[in-house]
Image 1 (tube, rainbow, N blue to C red):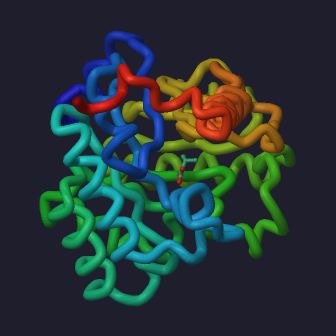
Image 2: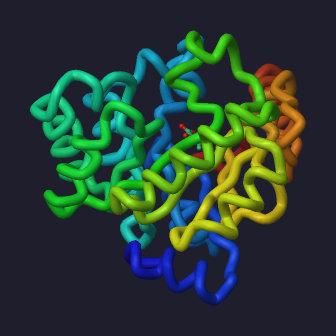
Length: 263
Ligand code: KIV
């Protein structure tokens, strides 16, 4: 996948789009050799890497730093860079400065949460030649407004709102849309009604693509077990056992051996 045109082609051909998050050069290097279609440098970096309680503490500088690292590790992948908290709510100058930093760091596009109230900014970013991916449903930057990390759109009114916003994002020119934690039925209807591809995380089986946080799918956090998550590795155990094995070999003077020594 090289450009936004490929997103459209894949939707037309009913080919599922795979996306994973990545925040650093070393794991980006592995992803660069993988078959995964695209990489999201999500603002979840604030939580996963920086240990913050929410994505509210992500900044443009933080996003640009991680996009730059990922681009170095994954020169061949399509990279989506997240616009951080309030970056599209403080006027066009702040928004464009954020876009500038993220794009110059190596992103191919930006992802923006929600749409109401920042339509003009989204339009301006797209007219400036920067592709925009939307993000609706559970939008973590609004965690305090939503009252927690909960499935969105279970009731009819919110469901209709998410549907309306998805249409609006398409009209504004977004090239794709992330749908996070919404009922399968809503994910299916939006995917059917929109011409642009939908990429789901906890949005059911019928979205055009799927995204997961890399550390989640690798099972690095044994305490994080949301309903939508499937882990493909017990990364926490593998990591811990390797570190403990190294530790015990050092203590027993089993490492290094002559094999790992210089003569
Ligand atoms: O920041 C992020 O990781 C995301 C995904 C959960 C879609 O936005």
